[in-house]
Image (cartoon, rainbow, N blue to C red; front, side, top):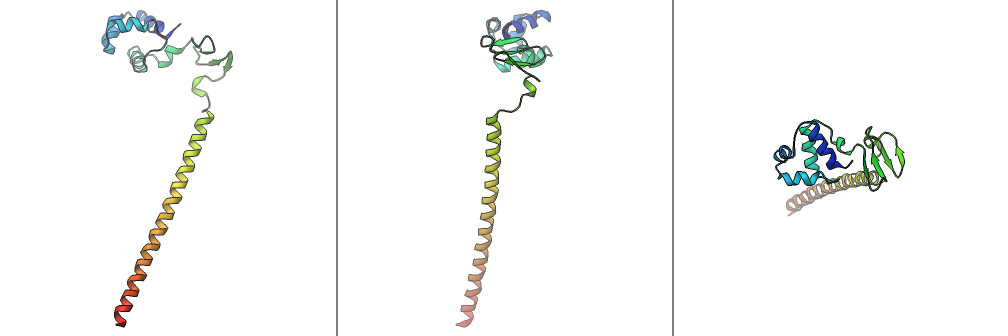
Length: 145
C-alpha cells in the first residue's frame, strides 16, 4: 500500500473526507486527491495528518515497499533491505560509519581549537610579561639619566 492510500484509508476510518483534510492542511481539495496516488508526500503534511488522527508518523510507512521490494518496513517496524531483515527495526539501527567518522573529526577539531586557544593565551601572557619588562627598563633608563 502506498503512503497516499494510507492517508485515504485513515480519512475513511475516521469518517472524514478530502475537504476536511484540505481545510486542515491549508491546501486545495485537488491536492488531497493527488496525495492519494503518491508514495512521497511532503513531510510537514504527513506530520500534520499524523497529529490530526493521533497516529505515529511511522503509521504511513508500515507495510510500505520501496524500490520494487528492495526495502520494506513491516508493521512491527522491522526493516528489510534486499530481502535481508534487520532485527530491531529502524529505531535501533546503528549510526552509519560516515556519521561516526564525522563525529570523530568534529571532536578532533574541537580539541585542536582548544589547544590553539591555550597557545594564544600563553602567547598573550608572554606579551604581557614582555611589556612589563620593557616598562621596567624604561623606568631604569629614566632614573639613570
